Amino acid sequence: MAPGAPAEPAPPPPAWVGPGKMLAMGALAAVWVLSLLTYGYLSWGQGLEEEEGGPLRAQSGEIPEPSTTATSQPHLIFILADDQGFRDVGYHGSEIKTPTLDKLAAEGVKLENYYVQPICTPSRSQFITGKYQIHTGLQHSIIRPTQPNCLPLDNATLPQKLKEVGYSTHMVGKWHLGFYRKECMPTKRGFDTFFGSLLGSGDYYTHYKCDSPGMCGYDLYENDNAAWDYDNGIYSTQMYTQRVQQILASHDPRKPIFLYIAYQAVHSPLQAPGRYFEHYRSIININRRRYAAMLSCLDEAINNVTLALKTYGFYNNSIIIYSSDNGGQPTAGGSNWPLRGSKGTYWEGGIRAVGFVHSPLLKNKGTVCKELVHITDWYPTLISLAEGQIDEDIQLDGYDVWETISEGLRSPRVDILHNIDPIYTKAKNGSWAAGYGIWNTAIQSAIRVQHWKLLTGNPGYSDWVPPQSFSNLGPNRWHNERITLSTGKSVWLFNITADPYERVDLSHRYPGIVKQLLRRLSQFNKTAVPVRYPPKDPRSNPRLNGGVWGPWYKEEYKKKKPSKSKAEKKQKKSKTKKKQQKAGSFPNCRAGVCHYRG
Image 1 (cartoon, rainbow, N blue to C red):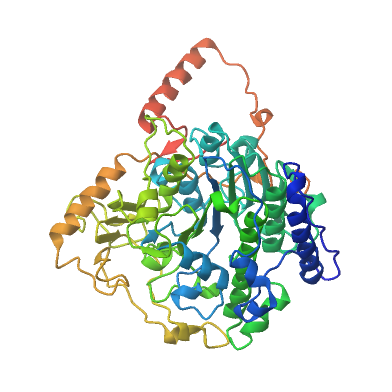
Image 2: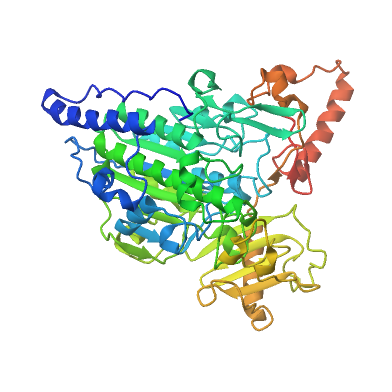
């Protein structure tokens, strides 16, 4: 909360709470109001040293929970952190304090062979569709604010499937799946309500974002409109948590709810309220110190979400899933040590993520899952838990992994297509010859099959960045273990089970395995749809939309052309038909890349 801002009043007891429950709720309300006055928003525990003071007693489950007649369908809470590094959680050895994450993970199931995508949009699209990027056309980069592009409308999203079986669906936080048309907005993709940002990043307090000089705008939404009336200059992590509390306070826990909480933290810009810096003054590197403060604030926010689930009667029938969307960015304070690489790369540091499941419904609590799990797996897993149905004609890339997580059974997943990006061909020495005539190794791609991982093209920044790298005032790569990619190198093979840090390239030792994985890549590529990566559209400028980032495409933008003779129309129709036959069912396609004009 901004200094001097009034404390937000506690939400009133929901209508479903009967008279017999009011005494307990009244006592809770008193504790709630006291904490609001003290911290500016609900806060229960800033560190383990406060244990005797009381806040962490709530965390241990001593606060009474209102009794309810639970629905057979569990409440689904998916929390997605942004750019959290693999090492940046207490139970992975970080110096950053994360008592909430540590406790929830220790009491649940830690996912220690869990993979996401290396950047924002791909991870989010795969979570919400259960499909690899090659099957949605989002293989390349992210969706830019100025691009007329979004998650394809013909994909049934997770919230849409959950709504079919009676779930109330709410999204709070970062969307980053496109918004150029109103049909692309979260509320049109299955969410009953949306409160958050449409872009990939922005100021944590003002919610403004500049994509380029002269291309700046406001980015905070309440459903389909700019949230001017709901913006009090509050730090976004705290603001989003307040909204989650309000949603839970007003919802009947006897009815199933899906909450997708996509926090902005700990993505740059590196900003945090002052009090979270107190424990990290010993960290000299300013980016690391700011990052640590942001992560501590995020950890406290998740504390508050968990308490709200208990307070309002959801917790006992809830499944909480926590995940980062990609690896950390060392230049912005994140650490993936001891993994190789960083955000934006296909090395393990870019795609192996912090993840865990916490739930009273788990059969094997307090365990570690080392089975292969991918972010696409949440789609079928959550639909199955919700007692929903997946259409037989939908080709998913995810698997139902609930029994793997809850009971410790073997994962149905044996491979992961990390990606094939036909646009990114920066490996100058890549060739069909290097790929044994099976695959053009100039193309950036990565695949995992059982223990083996193959990379082709240019996988990205490949250093190992140890903790010592953050011991200086500025970025210091002298501490890094630097690798200069060999001239002509465009294929790498690793046994990830035996060598999780990717230190020993086995591509020359096992050419037969390389060929097998190249053939698997080729098979996947045959199922790929053309890439959707259109050029910038000047109509996206917020100046043309009241200073707000938002949908800009309208049907009337299609200009009427002068009428043509029947012969001209017939000739044009024939040419158009031939072009579409070459490019498939996608308009304006060139070499597998589609440029959309709306």
